[in-house]
Amino acid sequence: MGRQQRAVCPHCGNVLAHCQVNYNQSINAFGLSSILFLLVSLHPHFISYAQHGLKQSISLIEAISLLAEHFSTLLAGLLSFTILIMPLAALLLILLAHSPLWRHLNPHNARVFVRALMILKPLNLADIFLVAVLISAFKLTEFAEIEVGLGFWAYVLFVLCFIETLSLLSKEQLWEREQQTFCPDEKTCSPRALQQNLKQCHVCGQLSDSIHCPRCMTKLKFRKKDSLAKSAAWMATAMVLLIPALALPIMDTINLGLHTKATIYSGVEVMWNAGSYPVAVLIFVASICIPIIKGVALFYLLYQVKKCTHPKLASKLYRALEFMGKWSMIDVFVVILLVSLVQLGTVLSVEPQSGIVFFTAMVLCQIISVNHFDPRLLWDNLEQQ
Image (cartoon, rainbow, N blue to C red; front, side):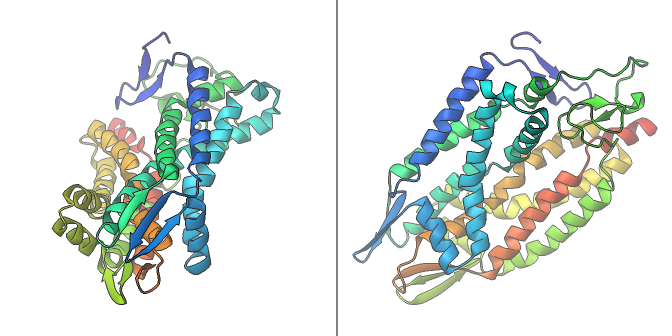
């Protein structure tokens, strides 16, 4: 493809590939900048707060260790993986893949690294964490004076550079470096791979009529096995978990010895009454509206597989569900942050409650449900009618 050209699916309109100018230079520049800002964000002063003469300043590392020591190792592991380990691992793999060292790697190791990178890419929650930090700061202004430090501003720059790095990352170009695209024997011209008995590799995107992908050696299947049943089961589980997630308190705030337990809805109400309308709307949409919308939308997609009335619209809806998946994690990060940051004993402290466990489980079940759904089924049944 030439400059400013892109390949688009003739059925659903999704962009399959596009030409990138100065690809190596751009991705290396943003990747190195991301690592630099991530390291600076570990500065001892990330955020600080003061109340009644007591002041506490905390770093990201201290927040994680405090969470693991006093409350939950699982939550501490989730926080450290999503904001530090995963981004750093992804960035190191990206820089390795676009450096001269890549040509000297064993082919098997190169395939393993690319597969690992493709797994890490959709797990980017750094932007969600940054939004959660801002919401947590708004919540804390009710009780204390908030001040952000060098670590916070460095993390803002890291998130911006990291998002740009991931947007530049091209799965097609990575696999082309490993092995040129395999071209199957010419077949009768047909608009869809299924009609030509071709299977698409879910790892590298290669089309082939063999049992294993000729490029990455992954076992190939025409469609995801039991896609509809698994997707429906996981989403049904998520909708059941949503009930206790919204009904039970997610955190307990101790202010001068007074305990105040808050549910997700009561938290929205408090922010609204305090005049923080944008924050209240953001939490309401991300934590209440999106989970419900995702449940309704997924069951609509399952219905569309059978009826096949609007496959193009359903395909766009599926891509929207993929994008929305991680945004429900905002409330999870807000609670984790408040618990790890606010620890001044009976003067001011925050403790997690059972509701956050149900909410986290609900979000994970919805993400798994959407991943199990195979959008190609929307077009398969259309052609059979």
